Image (cartoon, rainbow, N blue to C red; front, side, top):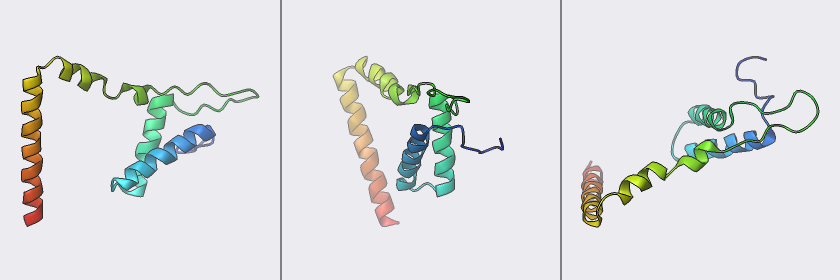
Length: 106
């Protein structure tokens, strides 16, 4: 099986990779780089191709990356006071405004 061969991936894994690649392309990433990132994500999530060699069903595809998001950030934010979170949000808003004005001039 040559490098890059996708024959051992399930239809579900291929759909998943297509969806991820489309999302990257919408964000302005090149098609080739989007495909590379998409398959890297599928491999990270599922541990590679899942098609069985013989008859029967493939192994279950878990979604570890999909369930991970927000955990660390939520825990960090909840331990800070409301005043600290508010100050941080105001600072971020000011930074976004300043950067938007800077790019609008240039």
